[in-house]
Image 1 (tube, one colour):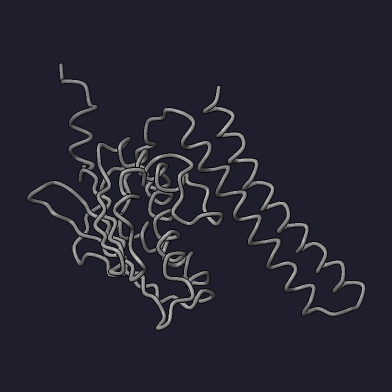
Image 2: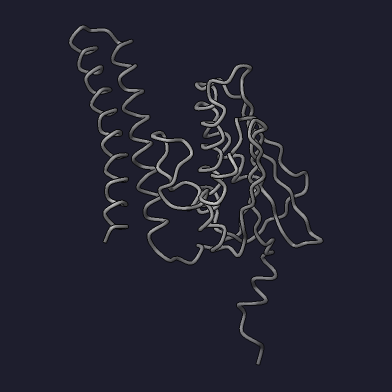
Length: 238
């Protein structure tokens, strides 16, 4: 019961902060409309939109983390999924004065995985990386790289940042739910959700970091080809 109470308290805190943001944005929109000032209304709308995205992400993470599920497997391309994440986060990166880059593997075959799940797993870690270097001087960098390793039958997605790194005493609880290194800015669900998604794929997440030298997260999942999957699920002839 104590754990449930702590979970409810943590979620309530984050939801309260998001609602306060929405109320603040709504106030600016109302002020802008009253004063016929589009710039004030536009500023308010950006605040509302930002907090709407926060509540949407929180709900999706809660749903993903709260239930056991099998990945919704389909044929897709890892490079395309990662590109979509980087493209989605470019505006956020620019707002935070962060250089966000993507270096896809030159050779990346069509593979079988859950594109929506991998998208969320990568998105959570890229979001964390941007937050880690936001406002740095000189500007921080986040680099996303994909690799196809056919000899090992795996695909890797690497997210490397130039942030402050992760303290040694935080490494053991990094993937524990509701434990955030971002203090009040984070829900503490992003990394556990990403780890859960990779585990569901038979993969893993590894972390390398030293204080003051940034962090590098590597997502690794089996490279399952469409032909391999067909051989597994097709009934024997005869």
